[in-house]
Image 1 (cartoon, rainbow, N blue to C red):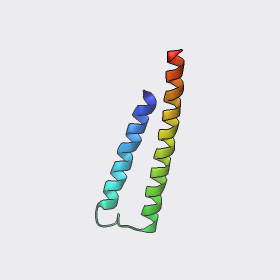
Image 2 (cartoon, rainbow, N blue to C red):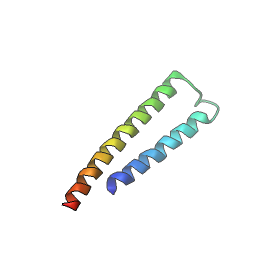
Image 3 (cartoon, one colour):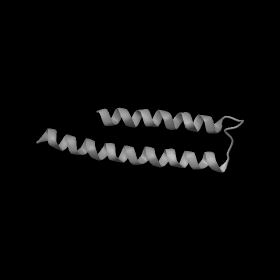
Length: 64
């Protein structure tokens, strides 16, 4: 369950970053901001996949 909470927190951070990207001004579509967004997406996906794998392992141990 703790891994799911971490994944939810990272998802909220990702949504906040996307909201900043949409807002006009200094957070415009520059190469740096696009790179940061890609890095956030990649990190979130990697952490979520690790959390899924750990949840599967924990569920198998509980079932046995």
